[in-house]
Image (cartoon, rainbow, N blue to C red; front, side, top):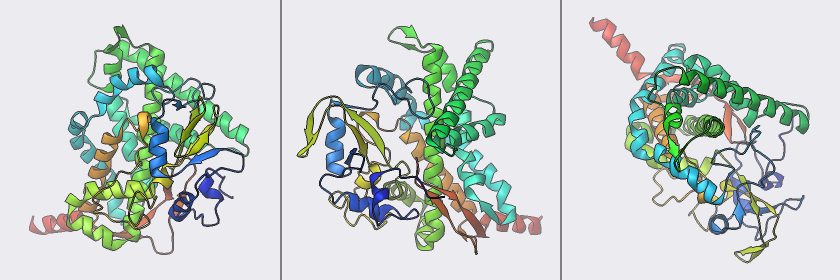
Length: 405
């Protein structure tokens, strides 16, 4: 099946599903990129930053909702004072200091997953590791039962990569999945009110006040709906792309295995290069001019984060992966007022997952006879990641332990 056209770069002759970076870079060479349907495209890093700062640029058209939702997602689909009000509530929950105590539990979840596939010597890492880990972390964060893991994975797949022979069928399937999540979250709130308070995000939302008033159930559900999707799929996709990169580039893997202190910079560089969320859309409410380009009122604009991340005017040698890149003002977590709320948690999850994976499995490769499959629709991810584990330090330690017993 031919992948759907999802962005302007997809229409270029240089497009490659596995390695789209060249096409994204080519997009930045056009002074005024426009899709055939007339949609204006912003691709250059400097222009993108200026465009997103403009007060006439909105995250929503006020009509359509994202990701199967029947209402605007909080705070993603809101703008202006309303958006700022909710960000003041949510931003402090995801500062580096607030997410740091989660490191131990993330490390434990990571090792539990590795325990399941390490003895076999091989794994399908998207299904066995990259998919379930961020989901488990968010289930813990929200205080939900781990038995509901598969329901969350199914929901995430249904709204991020909807199935269906036609667009209408895909949209219907997304909305159906969204309704199931609305019902699930409403039931959770009813159940929580009948139990003693707990130390998790949902308990915090039930108890908190915003501008002197308690959050309504609708507000809590709309916040959690977005957190579930954003917390699950962005980290899943980023982690899969990073492990795929390390599987195919053993010299880079050897460097971070030998010196785990490299990981923070390596993660930033791979977020830049891989751009797990390739693009977003914005709407213009009045005639504006940015970097010499006119954007008429009412325009929908395609903002291509992945192109800005390989813009040669912003990043020296942008198509080269430099794990020690000194200056890296990438937009892998978007930019502007709607920059990713959970970027600090995502960075923590990625660092801990890669640290533990490489501690346990320092040497691995793409399983001989198989290949990695990528998608760039909705998010960029290595959706099929067959890996053979060639060496396991933990297994070697276990053998030594048994010998010395």
